[in-house]
Amino acid sequence: MKLVVIWIDTDWRDSRIMSIGELEDLISIGELSKLTGITTHTLRMWEKRYGTPKADRLPSGHRRYPKKDVPRLRAIAKALDSGYRASKVVTGTLEQLHSLMGLQSFIEPGSRLSDPEESDLLVKESVVESWIKHVHEYDDDLLINSFHLKWGEVGGLNFILDYASPLLERIGSGWEEKELAISHEHFSTECLVGFLNEKWRQMNVRKNGPIVLITTLPGDPYNLGILMCAIVTSITRFKIVYLGTDSPLDEIIRIAKNDSPRIIALSISHSMSTEFTEDCIFKIRGDVNEKSLLITGGKGSPCNVPGVTHLPDFKNYYDFLQNTND
Image (cartoon, rainbow, N blue to C red):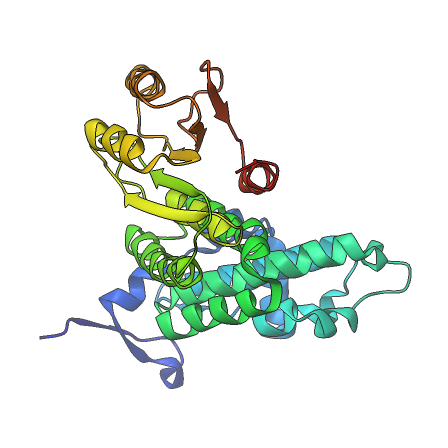
């Protein structure tokens, strides 16, 4: 049996039935203000003047706002900060806001958005916010289709640098601020994992270049780092040998000895202890031929291990691959 709650407003025409799940997706105006950076006064003014953001009213008169409107309001806030007129953007949909052609029509003369870099950054952020909207709605069809469209538009490297990495940061901040639930994080991760897996495997078929061995250390279950590493690797001449997550140390060393990879790439997450990580890296470096370059990345990666190259981001990793001789 589905549990429902009936809200009866002072005006009977506004009465409606909501499920418990729908109630959990509503937040107070104070929470909405905190998540978007827009003052409660401004939100109330917009609601009165423009009819948005549209709130549901409790019998007590308190308003509750849908969480799924947060990405749109954040895009509006960015647009206003950049010189847009409120009358033009407040009622716009998220799709209109992240459309470059649509955004240009809102720009005031002399706005700093005439700077192409500022405009480009806003558009990229708005694309990520549109993906967050799909996450709120658990719409995997729209989310994954949007991934494919953006990949086709910008290519693999720029997809990782400009969209996938910022999306993960946005999901992390949304979870910390309680805008997103753990179910949203799991949903978005599964969509991105499936998409990235498909892409790198397609590009790795029938390659005969030097080998990059990609893995995580034992006890490290996080796979998005190595998947994005695989994407960046797959758009170069290198052939990927992908061991996945939580690989036993002896297996990493055995395969490295057998396959003689040109590069061993380790993604190290925040969950790994520094002492254990360094012990593993020293072990690999000591047991594997020095002709195999050892590189590390990720939030848990140590920076100053002898004989090991630490790369802080995927752009540096791509440049490293391009400059590495066979």
